[in-house]
Image 1 (cartoon, rainbow, N blue to C red):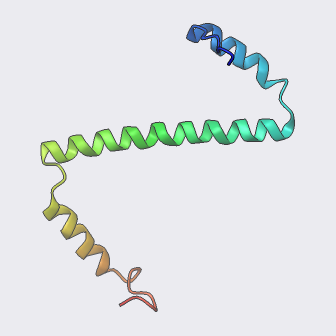
Image 2: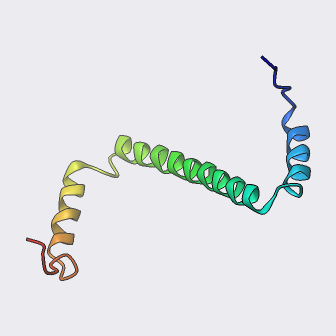
Length: 84
């Protein structure tokens, strides 16, 4: 089994920048998809932390959520054909 050499972040960034130019178009597409996943996870993690803080501080409560759902369900947008 081969060992993976772990580079310091600064060296790893420089190495990755150089490798990007060597990727084929298909590989570049896959790399872009992976980076998009990383960005999505980062955004989701931030949202989760902020939502947790809002629940802890009382900025969001079950009552407020229930009221928002009731208000939305009362809008014409929600009352489209096929919805009760």
